[in-house]
Length: 225
Image (cartoon, rainbow, N blue to C red; front, side, top):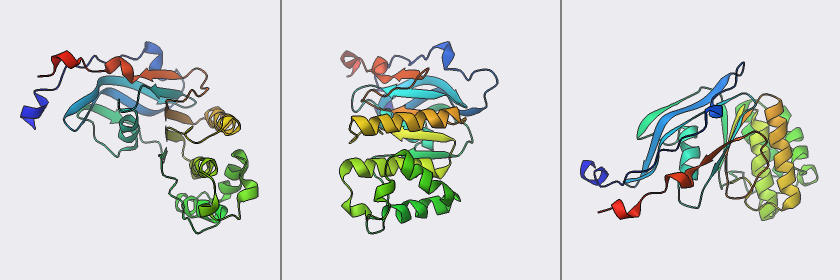
């Protein structure tokens, strides 16, 4: 491992503006402090620092393969940083490419299964309404279209009741109307004191969000032996 890491190119630090700190009077939910991410012996990014408090949002951008999904997984605790610290004990909900819903159950029951684990079954109805899925509540998940499945996955995040949402490419498979529903759901969550970390190559409206552009940390290939 030491030999492999000795060949890693120098990656320009990702420096987030001072406004990336938690605003006065807001509880801190998530903090990255000089975090470095290494996958397969390659540094995806290093020296990444930012913090999210109640009502805050951060948008992670950059081309495919640059480390957006890895950053989300670091925030979720599914990966460990190679260096630096990640802190924050706020309950969080993670959206990935998989909806993780029982294919054979009606949509409402599939969502209720996960909400039952979170103790938030009462939030399922509102989550369905927020994503315009109420009319599909009794339809088996396997019969849903790609866009409907994506909205269902987002509804699972809403129904979780978690104050911190970690969203990996949430706009994938969404048409313009569904994207508007997602943006409204995010705005509602922030207004109620929640925070959002979003990785997306699709433009999403996030007023006053921190922008974390990982393309600024692309490696200098001429430094690779």
